[in-house]
Image 1: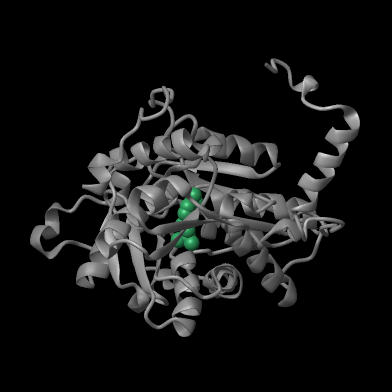
Image 2: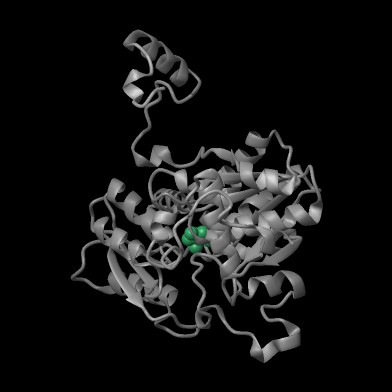
Length: 382
Ligand code: PMP
């Protein structure tokens, strides 16, 4: 009986098997990336074995948390925003030029990392109820961070409005070096376009064009719009499904064309009034990045916080995949869709960020995983 891995093999056999092991990874050999920007895109598509087995459908997830600058799909967007601004002559490195953005975290983290790499400054306005890991990380990346109370979009202090104002104040201030640039992820073409030229084509290539449905949550809407605009032009039969958390109006927008449920018009609680632990997706206003692809969204699924936590724990227990809240919502919606479509369909969704970014909120009150069969998907799949 072996009790110690050092007894596994003699050194020569071990060396031979290691060489064979690493030889499997074609394409990752001998390739040097040009800085962190070179590590953005080209993320793996992972078959989630446990969910595929449990549903009878093949459930595939694009591992966007493996983007190598800020570790989320927002790396693609941040890089596109900065490159487009550079092309238009709006940014000069090391001049004091500063990018301002309103973000719940991910876009800010991607911008802050790429700004460092390119000689710009980053100033991030974010709601103060987001997991503290995100603002801590932003500070460590050298960004200026303003955390504000969650507020409706008509409020000048709402985080997106504040970022726009701060950018204008910077440009108008003769005592500040450089200019202020508002990144404007909710409205800019650079957002959905990053997914139209990147995420969408990658999914198409990685599946060989063989997929039945695409499932995604939406914050700005850039991901679901950009991916759908690309994929539906290749695959008109593809079903696109929005995964939406509590308090978000997007579910209603897809189902009824308006942000509220017509049956309960005044009673609909808004995203900033709902105590959900899901971050990054769900919103109550119309944004260009959502609207540009909205007509391509065929259906919407509402996902509760409890279902998201159950799914996140299930994926740790069965697959060793540790994800954040929006990814968990995506996987719940993908599993529900699998039940609805029936066996033998292929569904693609996204894993947006790591659970490590959600330890203090989404993961905070969860029980440790006890062992096999600790977590059940019964409530989600029935
Ligand atoms: N997941 C996370 C963790 C996010 O931060 C965001 C963006 N706010 C999304 C998903 C949604 O992406 P999009 O803005 O492209 O709709």
